[in-house]
Image (cartoon, rainbow, N blue to C red; front, side, top):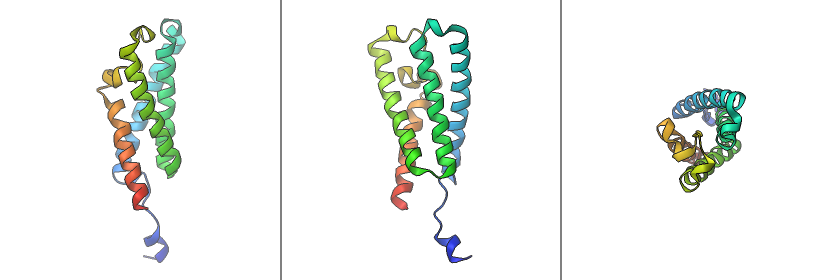
Length: 135
């Protein structure tokens, strides 16, 4: 091995990072497809919920691409925004339920998705922060 190869930091998407990317991609596709369908067919029924689901899908996609490309700062920003979003929307969906006549990905802290939307950014933040400290 050359010195350059040995000194190169391990890619963010290596090891456990691959699992995180896989989950982000699955959630980007599932939340995005669901949001597109809901926005196209019944946006007037729950515009806040459906718009938030579309935003969540976009954030999942940005996080996945940032991790794959090794863009640690962008990944950390996307996952941080995701965590803030799921906490805020989760709390608001209990406090002001009439804003969410239909569930969003993040409403009730992601209960409709097995709470993965709540756990994923926590795991992502820990992973990214550990990798950042190690670098």
